[in-house]
Image (tube, rainbow, N blue to C red):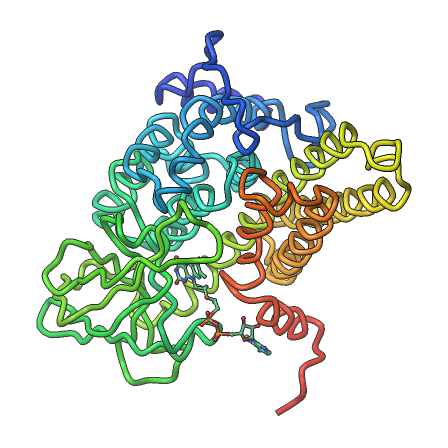
Length: 432
Ligand SMILES: Cc1cc2nc3c(=O)[nH]c(=O)nc-3n(C[C@H](O)[C@H](O)[C@H](O)COP(=O)(O)OP(=O)(O)OC[C@H]3O[C@@H](n4cnc5c(N)ncnc54)[C@H](O)[C@@H]3O)c2cc1C
């Protein structure tokens, strides 16, 4: 019965929200190596999937068409330009319902559970770079969970609804020049004056920062203890005193714009506060759970694709009278890597199955994020090796993945931060 209701709701929403139409007339994909589609080795829709139903697979299929038609043909150009048109792409995704699958229907979402967001994150891994999926993830699952959960109706109408519909681009302002891993030590202040907050300080590493219409900002709203003095505030980026200082040049994630932003006495109405004052640190820690699960789901698909492309390349490339692939060191290594990917997928699905039933999965989400970052580094390095000199060129997906995936062990909580959380749950940290 529950399954029938879910299916009915998805169908209803699909019709109502112009769910992306599966066209028989697909644009031919570019012959360029880095935009070529490769069949994923992800589990097929069998009806026996651990967390996915036929509705999840329908959602994935629909998104795949959109990616193939509207995104992948342009990825090489956007990578070269160091930015992608966020408003245009988010509008396409928003129209089709992909920016708020687990958000409430009254604010433009599809009202489904978080497993559908994971299905979307997985499918976004088929985009031929890491920067665009990351930017989409910020919009759908990193800047908005706290607003959806704790924001007032008025605030959700003003910021959440247009973000889900793709009319506004969102960014997340947590990290600062002097505070990344140690979120509690941020310095940006929001001082209450009358019915306004006056904000001063700055944010660093802000994804979507040069294009964003609003920021989910973490700021200190009192001088109290660091876990009780912070608040999340919806900050329009066009207010006087908001200055996007620069677009940061990076090792990878080229098509995603990353900004440094300053606030010089920016005045924001107090009604832009998300939930309760002083609860921002807690809300952000909760928001991080979905971000970390999202990141692990997103990279699993790309890892499948990179292994498949490496198999295809090494099968046709001959050395010492036989394909590179037929050397035991190569096919054994690829088998080891695929096994590791399956372990990560199982951990992820286990965490999601528990999360959608309302359990605290902080430990499992941290483990999945840690494993995703480390495996991506190992896998991209090993696969790139088997491409020889070709792997060192910028024309192939494996070299882009090598650059882009390095971020996973740093952003959204570095590996060591994940280890600290896991140790806390294992009760192995030194007693104070
Ligand atoms: C491309 C990109 C996009 C980003 N997007 C956003 C965004 O949209 N919004 C946002 O708020 N932030 C964003 N970030 C920031 C990101 O989350 C931070 O870079 C990350 O949290 C690490 O902080 P830091 O860079 O200040 O490193 P630091 O905090 O200075 O840490 C340096 C290193 O110390 C090590 N370390 C950390 N903790 C421990 C420990 N307990 N024990 C031992 N070693 C430890 C880790 O190896 C870590 O990499 C982005 C970063 C990048 C590079």
